[in-house]
Image (spheres, each protein chain N blue to C red):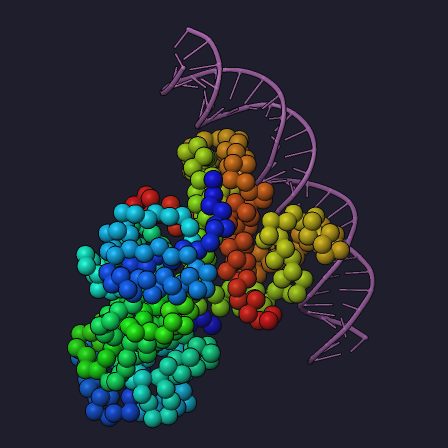
Length: 213
Length: 213
DNA sequence: CCGGGCATCACACCTATGTATAGGCGGCCG
DNA sequence: CGGCCGCCTATACATAGGTGTGATGCCCGG
């Protein structure tokens, strides 16, 4: 089943300084945000694969890993959860690097509570958006995978605008067979009109490239 | 007519320090990049509306304007040209702000020549991409505007997947008339198939929203 | 005032699409 | 081995889409 995404957001705080973890937890708690804390990046990676919306707040300097590497690891692992960086000793190139790689914000310590809250709120909102589109996309992908190989082929070809007979020629089969597959594809994909099918195919194509490669 | 975008890129350098302008011009010249220099933001805004691809390299501290405001001004004015920021006295929040607002890079002075070249190359590449999609989009938009009002309505309705007869009902006209408008729309838009028309409509919709508002 | 663009509609004809019915062939799994 | 499923095909019919011819009325600008 698709995610409901109606749970309360969860903020993951990663910092080796226990007092900082406590302070942040208190801050987020004061605005009704649930918090999970970790002392190291490894702790987070092994522990949490929560499906709740949220974001990560982490110090760039961690015992086991550079915060920027960690960020890279996250995207490579396919975890798209937004990251808010903080640091006590960072410089401009470091902040620029983090922002280029998708960080929501980069706060030097000490920071004002409000700045942190603004950043976390923005990150959570970004996560919400991300989850909506990811949900839609994975629903499409799931449906697409219920199609038989032939049905998938036919769907991709007809959504380029080719006529049934042209698709039939391309695949070396008869037009009537294309119609069957086409109809099955429409039905299984939940597309009520051809225009919907075209849009579904467009939304699917980026995802399909990633797998074929 | 559409832009050709085959001209050589042009780097706009905005810095009040003449020696810095000279140094950058020399640097860019050494790799075959043409450069235009300006002492103030105003100089740039009044002078240059060049249609050539390129980017802006500017110092955050300018005589007449803050570099960050300038960046905001650019987007508001609809000038999507990428910006590389540099500064001699910036801090992390400043760099983060610039990156959030779309800067390609943010280099503290002094910087290594290679870092500046990398940033400028990336910015130019981004501009090239931007121009490609903008060109495509504005071509679509131009074509769409050659459609009569009725043809536009019909195009937007049929591309939602509605059948001709449904569109006819919505508009209070006969199905045959819808077919006429539909055919005219296909022809004027240069769409050879219905799928193409659907994709054109999808590409147009964001642009149309911006005007109606 | 007339030509042209716009919008409307009708009739006719052809093609494309959608679906139902019915059947053949091969592979896989219980 | 006997189904079931995927894949293929055919005939037939109904509906949707696309185009041409012809025609009416409106409005605007030359």
